Length: 216
Image 1: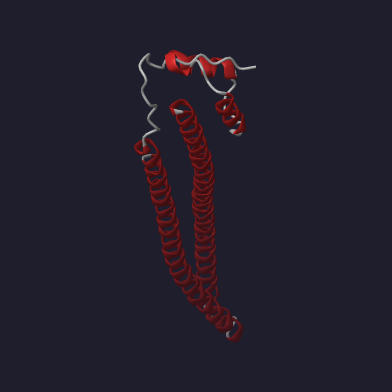
Image 2: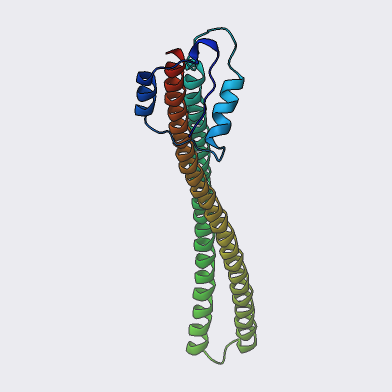
C-alpha cells in the first residue's frame, strides 16, 4: 500500500476522493525508481501553504520539435553533399574516359599508318626482291621496332588508365557507403526523436493527472 502524506487540510480525505484516486489508470514510468521514492520526493517538494500545482509549461514541449527539424535539415544537407560528390565523380570519370578514348584512337591511327607503310614495303619487296634488299630490311626492322615501342607504350597507358578507373570506382563506393550510413543515422535519429516525444507526452499526462489530484 502507498502511504501518502499531504499537507494540513488534506489529512482528512473522504472515501469518495480515495475511490476517484483509485480510478486513475496506472502509469508506467520509464525508469527503475520505486514508486515510494517518487511520491516521497514529490511530498518533500510541496510547500506548506495551499498552492495549486501548475501544469507543465507547454514551452518545454513545443521546443522539442525544433531539434528534430534541425536534425532533418542537417541530414538533408549531408545527402545533398553526397549527391553532389557522386555527380562530380561521375563527370570527372566521364571526362577522363573521353580523353583516354581520343588518345587511344589517335595511337591506333598511328599504328595503322605504320602498318600500312610496312605492308607497302613488304609488297615492294615481293615485287622486286633483288632491289635494295639491305635498305628495305633496315626500313622493315625500323618499322617493327617502332611498332613494338608504340605497342608497349599503349599497353602501359592502358594499365595506368585501368588503375585510375579502379581508384575512382573505390572513391565512388566509399561515397555511396557514407551516403548509406547517413541514411541509417537519419532513420535512427527519427526513431529516437519519436520515442522522446512519446515519453514527453506520457510524462506530461502523468504530471497533469497528479496536478489535478493534488488540487482536489
